[in-house]
Figure (cartoon, rainbow, N blue to C red):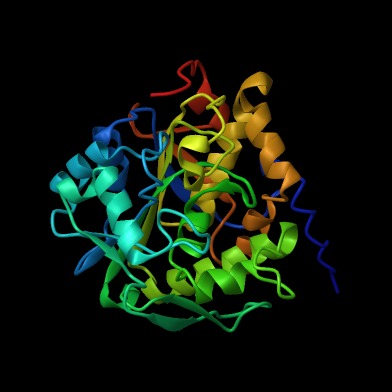
Length: 330
């Protein structure tokens, strides 16, 4: 009998050569623009149809680092003209805590100028099963979420105060959980609304994500935009820490783990001085546990083929992808 080694702590990065299992495909472009989003999305959209939801972080008022609403407008017009952006209210008291406050913030940030946003927990919640979890058997999400046939996770990849990094996993795990029950299930512990940290938090976020991913099955896909990468989440709005990480590009995959793992690997491929702040943030919050736990839950592969769509679909390494990056904000 061969005993599996226990997973490394979430403070420890696992290099590619130490990973095992199958490989997924991750598409990459350096083109940080609406056209770039379209370019990679078209490679991973085969199973997106019917009534489509787009889950993205619409941001706190005047948030400087979110995916620009103007970019999303062009993307939707070209690729998903009938889709709906979906959001949920926040667990913390702020400008998106109630539906009324949230709608004012959506207007401030330009979303209502071209589309409607479905705040999915506006009219209550519904429980989705969590298969194989150790913390949850079900997760509370906005009651409108099951109204959709497909979901596109359009994620601004960045840091996070509690999670280390915010990729597709955080976008769905926190972003689809409703503002009171679901987010409380993830964060609260022993009567403390914000008692869960490090390994447990990463695992709970991932189990929440699994509920949504399993619900949509093959009808879900993931796009990570690596631009304006601060160690802060977009939930910090104008108080976010300065951007000290270069703009890198856009990734897309039908495998959520591969998309987030590739995003983290790109950070590790940067020059040491360019990746330092983000890597310290991920390690100090045990953020790598998001990746290893998604793998344990069977949510995808941490090994992948990185395909450069800018250069004839050539297979490249993360080092190839970040070679020569110089822009830090845009």
